[in-house]
Length: 344
Ligand SMILES: *[C@@H]1O[C@H](CO)[C@@H](O)[C@H](O)[C@H]1NC(C)=O
Ligand SMILES: *[C@@H]1O[C@H](CO)[C@@H](O)[C@H](O)[C@H]1NC(C)=O
Image (tube, rainbow, N blue to C red; front, side, top):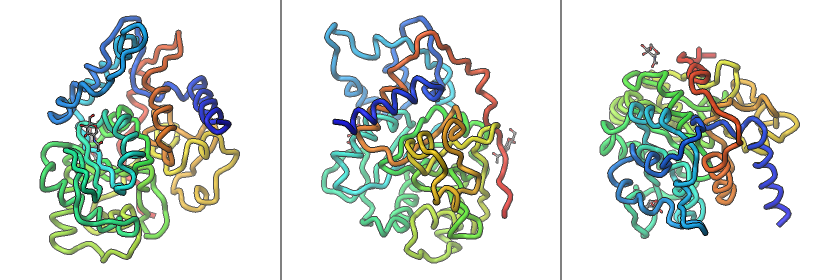
């Protein structure tokens, strides 16, 4: 009980300070069918599933989306131009816990999604690739990216891989990606400068590659054997080595104030922490600040979010407004820039 209250008050504090307006949407006085708009751009499979989005009417027989005063037309417009496939590797034992929470929250705002799980519980969005175990994530990444390349290369511009305890704000990710050309080899995420001379984008914050990066990863890296051998590291480290071997450069995702957008760390550590942890100091290529400067106003991801926290965070970000505050998308439009990160 005490823990739940603590989590709730932490997130309430986040909401009531500036961070609630992370979301790239504006509030307006008019009633808006949020559910309708949220699903407009998603894939066909998802359209079929639309009626499950908000099944419970409230006591006055209004569904939640009927009662929200949020106008997300700017975010929707962007999602017609920047199409992102999200993919999440997970364990079968997480299907009823973390996968459910991910599937009920942020993943709905991807243009398409896939869970890579070895399981006998089939679902249209679960793919089994015959590789299991936390120690075999690099091999799983291999199989998953080959699968995505074969079946989805031309359907999406970008491919975002996150953990099942990552929470991502897709509207903010799309704004960042809109600064880049998916026909160029682009690789983005939170850069940790360790394990390889050129570092890697962390799997917990999630990494994104462009369509062209996926193409060269498979056609040059995998099919022509240009990748170094898998060394039992995480998939995030291995894909970084492969992308480097085929000439995909690291690209910049901090905002113009130098604040991080992807976060390998938890909200507790970066927002409520008193000083950077040892890992942040040792690994993060760009200094990871804590406290008010920790995170961009258009933060993209947080890690180590448990399933309950995920529902709370989603509620605070998408179903809670702070009365009297209106966000101006024009002021945030240029928060991100497009540039490569020079090699060390
Ligand atoms: C995720 O949610 C969609 C829409 O409700 C549903 O069709 C799908 O089966 C769910 N997937 C999993 C793995 O629970
Ligand atoms: C950066 O933006 C310019 C101008 O919009 C574009 O031509 C270029 O391809 C972009 N770079 C990448 C790596 O996407």
